[in-house]
Image (cartoon, rainbow, N blue to C red; front, top):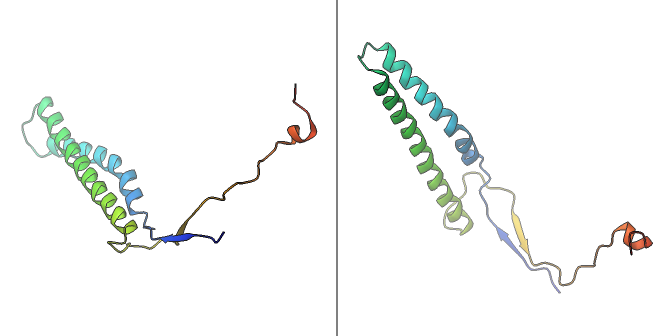
Length: 117
């Protein structure tokens, strides 16, 4: 039987991984920075308003990261469907049909008769 291999184009860029890793870190940083700005700008904000300001900054960063990740997943889908070019092409992956009947693998204990009742 001949090898049936189909070349699949994939995205090789690690940009999506960096965004997924740094979005929570940036969200915490945005919340902290919003608190610092609220306290040190001379604005008369009580504790509840400062927390609300921090929560708004945190939500804005998380929503932006989520929207970016959604778009990145759409891009990766389009690359696999050959409807878009990858930013950084990965080495070609192949999807090969499995072997029809692979040989059974025996453990050394089974081959020597050990471990049988």
